[in-house]
Length: 402
Image (cartoon, rainbow, N blue to C red; front, side, top):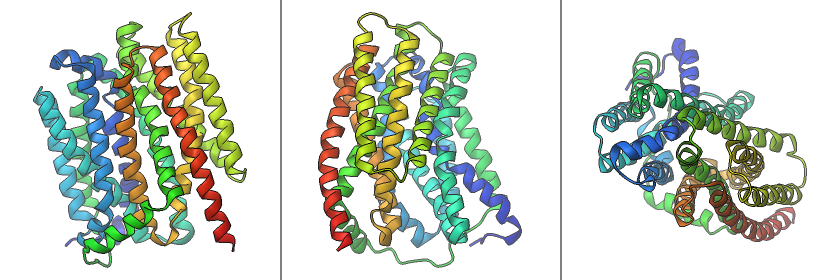
């Protein structure tokens, strides 16, 4: 097995950081192309939206046991195989215009992306420690947040200039470049391989999921992220079909949505010492106010400006809530941080994919009004869940202080 060479470690580390937003690119780059895909494939809006949901669900399920798999068999060879498979499936999506083939390829891509990204996160734990490791980890969320900003912006121009297939050719080409660079400049970073034992893994996962505040926290961040995804699923059809703008405009709107999420996360980091309960309820209040205004305004005016204007504020508050509770879930089990991380990411993707697709189709979200109704319904569920979460969180804090 090829081990990582010392003189290649610097470039290999930069390469590992570049892999972090790959999952976001795989979801967000073709958002502006959803209406065009529906027309070209002769399927409904819901059918092409499902391709994104299937991918997210696949990423989520895969993260449950990937950490242990990578600890047992290493990161490097699995990563190379995953990159090669992602390249082939991306090209297949572009050249085979069949929705069922696309579904199959997206399931495979979800598994490969989970293997690649989780393996690269583990790379930093393998090679670094202490302050240096914390410094790299702090970059993860910032780099990850770049995908929903950059990807749909590029995708809008690809769609406008070359059509929807160009997005998947781009993904295939990008992963092929990564594969070549990995072959020349990377290697196995894992120093000690661990036996693959299913029973202890299941016991750890079961124990965590029986912890009420942790499980409720996972549901909340999943639905919060689902509110973002429901906009991603519906905005191309609202902006391009209802309001009559181009795919480039959809790309710009998604860019603003991504910037809003990042802004909310930055604000949450600045207010990290403030009481959790109070700041979360304030954010809920802001979201409730803006969503209500979005619904009321839709009866008088439906425009790109009112739609994006309200969404920016709603997503800033959503990014704020998500950042706080995501951090809480990740740090809830410090003795099993790796498993907690995989479980947090996995459940988040699964819940967000199910809720976003479910509410988008339940309310037939094709206008500002129904987007607001869907968001309000999801917000009310989140508030109820948070009330119970906060109750169990207080019990945990009290017991911890005894």
